[in-house]
Amino acid sequence: MEKVFAELQEAIENGETQAAMDKTKDALKLGLRTDKIIQTAINPAFKDLGQKMFDGEIYVTDVLMASRAAHAAMYVMEPIISRFSGATKGIVAIGTVAGDLHDIGKNLVIMMLQGSGYTVIDLGIDVPVETFIDAVRTHKPDVLALSSLLTTTLPELDNLMEALVQQGLRSQVKVIVGGAPVTAEYAGRIKADAYANDLFEATEAVGDLVKNRIGKYAV
Ligand code: B1M
Image 1: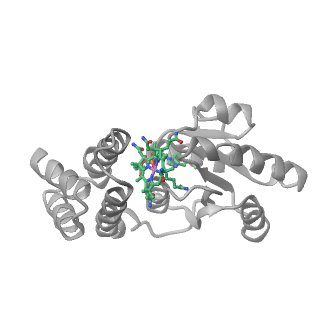
Image 2: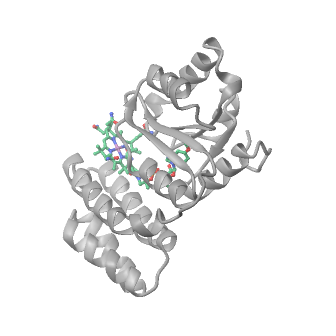
């Protein structure tokens, strides 16, 4: 069992799209759960790549190839994760903030939310504050979810919170923030409603927000 995780991780790190798809199929055939596959093969692949990039062992292009392979693995799992059918539990508008092009984590959060029964409006990457504000007006989501992977784009989270207040929209939507450099402390400082560390916490936190509960991810 560990072999298939190691092989999938290796395929992703090497940017081998077909192998990543095949290994994901193998893992599913072995009866392994999608959350286990994400936690045990996909997340570690990017932890490793991040370190290698930091150490100068690989280049951005290598990471891009790996991202493609990870997306292919996620594509294989998507029908299983998103097979929830029934009335929506709530609407979530999500995007990666302006200046930030990272979307692997955001896409995992989306798959998990969809799989758990939420309607998700994906605003994409490099999303300016105005687009988030438009989405609140147009789609009236229960929750606005912001992802930031760069320290330099963290102030965008604060800008969005300020814009919501200025536009008189703050009471109409709950806000959850996440992404590697985001902390619960920062989320509290900018007066977001919740912070989540990973896709599992994000889904649980959204559940609390939709039900107006002060859950363990409130900040
Ligand atoms: Co970039 N990158 N990157 N990168 N990259 C990081 C983030 C970095 C930590 C690498 C490093 O230096 N060690 C570093 C940021 C440093 C910092 O600011 N603190 C960095 C940098 C510097 C850069 C560039 C500036 C590099 C350059 O060009 N010199 C550049 C910036 C481009 C831009 O955005 N403007 C850049 C570019 C890229 C690629 C395009 C090559 C590629 C992104 C491809 C893509 O996303 N389509 C990339 C990648 C892949 C990474 C690393 C290696 C992996 C990120 C990832 O996908 N992780 C990353 C190093 C690392 O993280 N170890 C790195 C896997 C993913 C599953 O985890 O995204 O953390 P993550 O998501 C998690 C949680 O964070 C959380 O749940 C997810 C699933 O559990 N989460 C949320 C995320 N969003 C959430 C929202 C929520 C709740 C939870 O609620 C709303």
